[in-house]
Image 1: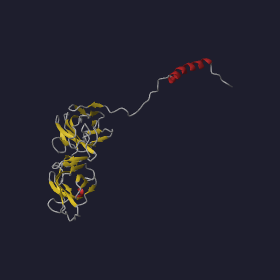
Image 2: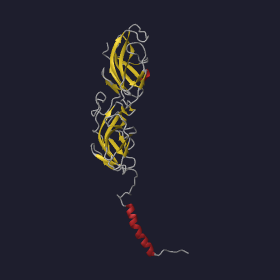
Image 3: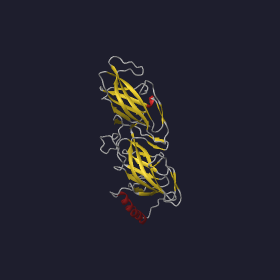
Image 4: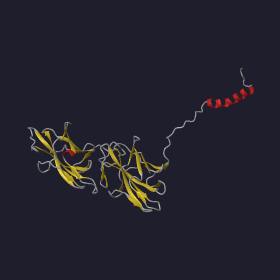
Length: 343
């Protein structure tokens, strides 16, 4: 038996369907699209010199960014020495922390998280110990109520370009403070800044140095004391007819602060290369020698201590040296000395 739906019910069904169909097909009204994870963390826009409270009671802490600077030299915190590689520079953040609580508050390097974003939108976080500003002491302190202390944090960032953004946060709070660091970081001094960068925030990987001036390598500083041409054989090496030696004497210094440990050096600690006037490059393949006699030298230097040594290269008598470069290990930036005036 075939059962037929009464006409009034069919009509009512049709009337109810029309508005719904109209909503779906209305031109120019796209459906709502939900995208997760696109909203940034809640927080404040930071200003240098302005104080912000981060974290939740009873561990909330007041934070004030007081300044920032770039450096290509090592930074010592306690017995830790942070050394930038050739393709890096160091960002030093200076700030104060203040205990606003009625109880003691422990502050150390994990209390605050510092994350900087470079020009390529890559994050770099501080995972090192922090220092007490004005010293090289590691800062790990119990702050009394209302006590304030000045500190600094060090982050390795790319040698090239500015650092547009700094984010400061605490682990148990989703609110952050964001700083726009463009134009706010003290520029690099000469001769370490790339002269082609008007902002002076790009660090050279090979730094031109003057005779008699110390330059930073890795853990050591180095200066060229003198350079000369000589026809005397050195370290048992015979000179052929029409050859002479270019001899360079250096002073080496452990450039870390007094809180750091002694550092050993020997011939393979450094790599020397001579570029001659024809543009050819020769790598040094002998021991570093004592300045006054043909004996190899090595040793251990405490922070601030110095030692002297020399290296030499054979050259045709009718050819001058152009530049002498040196790096420490495999990753330090190079110091480049003009040796074209050697006589």
